[in-house]
Length: 253
Ligand SMILES: Nc1ncnc2c1ncn2[C@@H]1O[C@H](COP(=O)(O)OP(=O)(O)OP(=O)(O)O)[C@@H](O)[C@H]1O
Ligand SMILES: [Mg+2]
Image 1 (cartoon, rainbow, N blue to C red):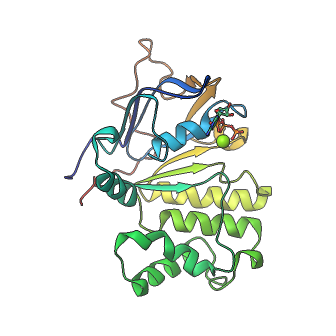
Image 2 (cartoon, rainbow, N blue to C red; image 1 turned 90 degrees about the vertical axis):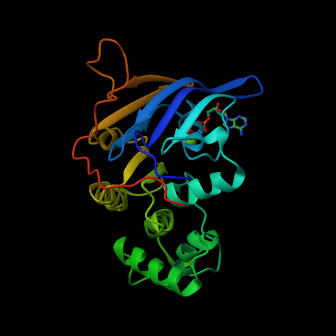
Image 3 (cartoon, rainbow, N blue to C red; image 1 turned 90 degrees about the horizontal axis):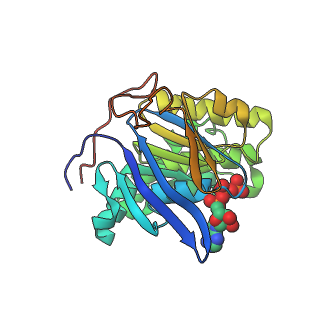
């Protein structure tokens, strides 16, 4: 694969059905490098389905998904793994940290399949844990961490390889307002550093504070503030999120 330019993420007419349930229907979405956007919508409306498809964890039933300019469908398994490893960090809605594993190793394992030697992975993991404010909890196992701290370990793991695109599914969903605010500060900081960030949230205040909001309802994108004010309803191909930092490169594997 060689470097690619243009949008970091595109969904073109993406549909996902499970039996006769249409979890996502005809979704069109373009995300440019440096954007920070919220995905909101009622429970069961298709938000996680959409994020999992963006993260190439779920295959769409139909439509095209492009990540960093690459048509996901056209990639071999090997290329897809490389794309995931180099381009995408994923914070899951139900974050699971392996029992009995210290925070440092949980994070270091995030680069297990990248070919990076253990020593280097541990060094990066320590640096990243310090970055999320957990430098004093490196050797704590999950049961020795608070919920907010566990969520920060999950984020550290997702951003360890410094992916240009970070997808976070309800990263503050299980947290009290103070830990939630700390996690949001961290996501904002990553965004300021140039990471493109997509956040699913139920929290209206969080969504309202982000530069772009996408609302999903009954498996449809019902509203996209990134399209607001465009009478033709077209995406904002000429627009990059406010405060964007355009310092990222494409895939270089
Ligand atoms: N693997 C699956 N098999 C069958 N149906 C599924 C599957 N995953 C999701 N669904 C259905 O697809 C719809 C969308 O689910 P999704 O998880 O995307 O919702 P969501 O918007 O993330 O909801 P929540 O806010 O509760 O997390 C729901 O009706 C759900 O029951
Ligand atoms: Mg969900």
